[in-house]
Length: 117
Image (cartoon, rainbow, N blue to C red; front, side, top):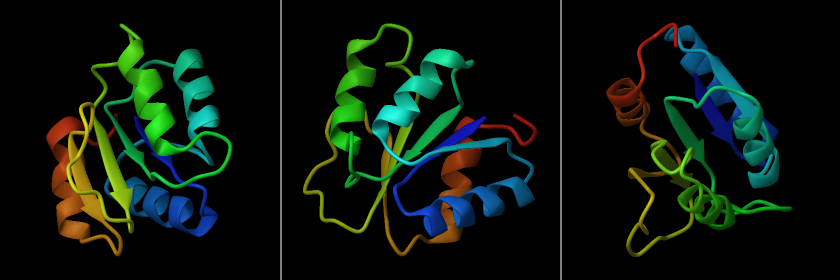
């Protein structure tokens, strides 16, 4: 399962649709708090696609929460953001810039997930 975390519903839906077309199971959250609650209720995903700038709990705060959890810290996190990030902090597997290069997105997800998962 891939979790897409983005406050922009259009972005969430587009990413979810594209990944489902590739055979991945996708769950979505509108902010970090929703994602964290989801992570505590379900099996760990193979990867989290995470926006940084969101209301309620932003991507930075979610990354911090993941790093503090023995259960969640090993989940790969791929940041998808239009904002400049000088250096990805610990806990980030990769940084993808918006607008997203779809080949880069698909190869990154394929590195961590198998279609049908």
